[in-house]
Image 1 (spheres, each protein chain N blue to C red):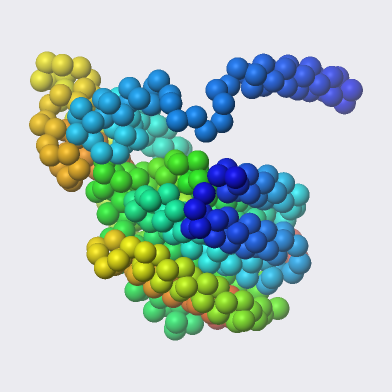
Image 2: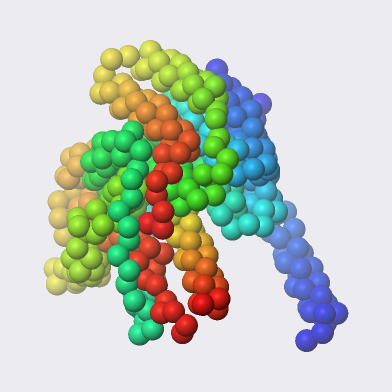
Length: 150
Length: 246
Length: 88
């Protein structure tokens, strides 16, 4: 076990336990914030695992999750907009922490990879991950408030 | 059946299952071993035919018949959904109201839509080289289209999604797989045998003989199948209303 | 020690699956299910099966939640129209 896999284990263990606790209890708004946190935890972990196993092709997994994770949160935000309108979640501290962790992981993995085409893929993944995370948080805070019945 | 009898049947079944599982566990190879006879054989055969991703080789060459079966299951499931979720006689369509999504979300959806489509095509095209393939990439591409529903409204999605075309593409993808298989028969070998095309240079997009062709057929079939499936679900959830008082 | 990550992820799979079963409301259950999809994808990754993990990610992160939530919306809307029809 090397440092990359150790970092991934700690991130997965702590982050996903917190996400599970959040998603399985409490009001709907808290559950949705926790669901959004899942992507922000799992995607950097997959990048760390790809680096730890020395398998650059595993980065595709992180890329896919960075793309589709926020889409999943948007699905929930849109189709549960009626229920969300009552209690608006405010978790910008958590969102920015997650974005900071993602950025740190992407920078560390990029530094280990060195300038190449693989690094471009890592940077695209990072941008999609952080951008998607911020937009999904915005969507949870009333992004679909005007949507009714559609 | 009384409650007690049902519990007894459950107990008998559960005990049998537990006994079989324990027996099977006793005979398992130890966890995380590095040697497996089937794995060795599959990797050697896959390198012989210049396919870098052994999983894609197993799916589209060694076990191409299984993939044909899986594809037929998806095809039949989608046909079943189309029949079950059609508009019934006592239902009518109500055009959905235009919706007003927050600008950042709308911009994100419009920006990510093309990126997701390209990533879907990339995953399909590199199926025989890196993890991925027709199924995974097809699902990503089909999901990407539905960002239009999430970021705008259902009418925007309907405008770019002629459902008839996707139904035809679904059938065409299924046919393409069969045609590649039958080409093997016509060439004098066997159905779905990978002896038709040159195997190409190892680790390039055109390597692996018929593997990339079958992979592309699956990609086409899955993309259209998921789009058609989601279209039926969206129709039911957003547009089709039951007649009042029926 | 090298298998620590596998043990952690297996425990997470067991915990999320239990949470998914214990949640009663379908829309909240779909939220737990989407988390479980991601955890399963991570499990397949640490067991060195990236192709399966990709399938799980592609289906579990956006497609399954969309199908479930659309079905829930249809059922709820139907209940609402039936109520209105009964009242009027």
